[in-house]
Image 1 (tube, rainbow, N blue to C red):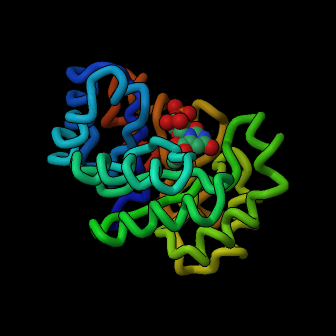
Image 2 (tube, rainbow, N blue to C red; image 1 turned 135 degrees about the vertical axis):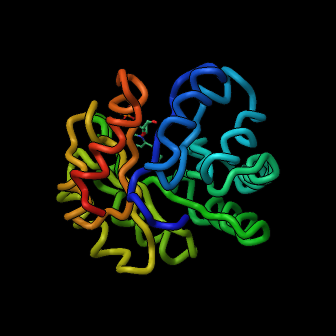
Amino acid sequence: MEKKNCLILALDVTDRENALRIANEVSEYVDSIKVGYPLVLGEGLGIVKELAELAPVIADFKVADIPNTDRLICEHVFNAGADAIITHGFTGRDSLDSCVKVAEEYDRDVYVVTEMSHPGGVEFFRPVAETIAQMAADAGATGVVAPATRPERVRDIRKIIGDDLHIISPGVGAQGGSAADVINAGADWVIVGRSIYNSNSPADAAMKICNEMKC
Ligand code: O7E
């Protein structure tokens, strides 16, 4: 993913018409569009191809299964036109290796969740976040997902992975995180959903976040 605006749109609307309208309105401000279960379960995987015409698509399926099932999921998602996939890391190195191998075959990206941004994200992830981040680096992942709601954790995780891996960071706006703070803490991109797609003017909301970050 090319870094221009440091902003990824989390497009968690559930219908095609809204999704395409919002994506069109904000495409000049975002470097990528993240699509997950809400939209794909609502409209089918075909929506990925339509959105990929506007911006690279990150498929957020938080893949968390045995290596063979992970491989099948990644193949489907990349064949559908996604540029990147998001996986969990707690399933272990062999499962992550399977995703990375498929991504290499397709020349696509893999991002691994370390610690999640919501309050419950500390319950189980906190003790293992650094270990997962190290595993992502060892496995050759493109980058990791770390919480914008806790910039200090982004700093901790940046120390583990060094400069080679990217950090993409959700939790800005609706979850209370600040885009500028988390970029200063070492994130490469912020992921923003509701503050943009629920706004009366998604383009203005996206532009405002870009201006805050001065990326
Ligand atoms: O709070 P919002 O509306 O700005 O949306 C945030 C998006 O990021 C939403 O799609 C949510 O599922 C996702 N997310 C988190 O909010 N926290 C996390 O820890 C991880 C993710 C996520 O996207 O993981 C993969 C990048």
